[in-house]
Length: 251
Image (tube, rainbow, N blue to C red):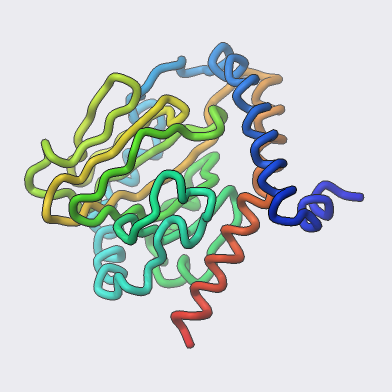
């Protein structure tokens, strides 16, 4: 039996068990990623370590034009937990919307077609695995949580930021940063982190997960593990939910 077939035949209870065990394995291996990270192990990183961030920042207004079109039909954009039910512990209301382009390498074709310039730009990024517009509605709080895998880094490009920037912020570990339109932010999401939009305005960022630069042979192991995630129930269910959502709104 192939790994893909094994995952596809799991029932809901077995799926949760496999996901939990997989997360346990990842947690135990985090020290390997930390010790072999070429750019170090800390909360926030200088985005300029990655040359492609300059290209995104230079084109942020083009990306902004495409998300502005999406925002005119915000009711058609799913909540994060509608796409990924595993996020219910983090968000269970309708104030965190997500417009996916990629999820661990799996492409959302229709969404990409609607935003051709954004798609063109993100597809040029080395190691890009996940990409979506992350839309926080007014007075949304994302509680303290942490990401499952240290083999990727989280990148955010601010596209639409409330006027009162001090009230729209992110804490990673003990460090707090605020968004500025057209500017990049990069951090390690395996540190506990929390987000607030304590304003009456919407906050939108382009949200990317990219492969963390690691020394060989840990980099090879990381590539294999990311592939396992891409065929796991966690990602496959999300892709199906996204396809079902697109079918529903296009009827």
